[in-house]
Image (cartoon, rainbow, N blue to C red; front, side, top):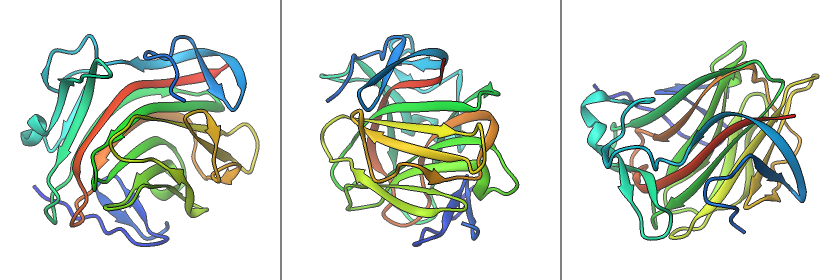
Length: 237
């Protein structure tokens, strides 16, 4: 099965369909994480360093779609980061690949962090899912387009916001923090612990938060090899 996702300026990606509404820390993250220079205690919802996963196709508690392409989402041994999730999506038009880790959190502040190492020219999406009145409001996508090193955030109602740079061939720690205690709900994006231009951005997403996803979109040239590691979803206390 092949589902096409159109990507354009101001157009949100919605799972597997288009939505027109639209300095490295410790390897395992420990029980604390950074927001700028502040250290905060956390309640951990999900922590996955992939060290306990067998090498080969990614399995439970993750799910991979399309199911017949599970060999393209694999746990590999790296020279510099231990075991990691490797997404190797073809750049062919119409092909898509999605790795999902579900959870449930009613927290009004949530943080979804991941280490990412894109190969040169590769493109990826890192997605947080929650509740909302439309597909675009239920998701925040952090995306790097083909041939670019720019990280963008995409959601409703703010559209696409340029955050900062995620270079190729090196690990970057990307942290998404959602503040949903009072309206308007907002989010911040940090790269290697430093604030970016994506700070205090409006978002329609609300609790309960229910999953994170690594994705290769079905658009032409999207895909390539991208490594993900040290997934940490947490609630600041």
